Image (cartoon, rainbow, N blue to C red; front, side):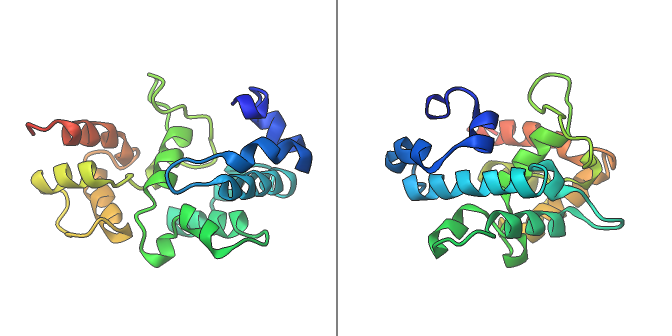
Length: 188
């Protein structure tokens, strides 16, 4: 936030190459300064040419979320870049569970009325979302009989979401927070 003058939206839309110097030393786990700078350029490109992030996920009639995530990934990686940047944007077409993207979509598309999920985006229905699948959520889902697959991949995320749709077809992902919470409880 400090490197973006506490105004990330304005920064993304108007930064210049000179503004990016502080980001060259940014490091978080496997994400380095070069990755961060590419992300900033890519986001600037998306806001300048596609109308923002939400527009990257707007569905076509009859289209599920998987091709929309893939379309977003293609737009995000449209600028010239080293191969290493691609590992930071998961691909459902390659079988990744896309946990981070699905979590982001949950936050942006659902409104839980409690501030966990913001519900700012109205063009994507919560019914279309896929449950973010991580080790905690998957472990609990298997213990509860909601997930049979042994791998934590896209197919498993779809299987879990399908099971959750039986409880609420309009908002199956609302159960993610509870599954995750149980999963981090060591006594469950």
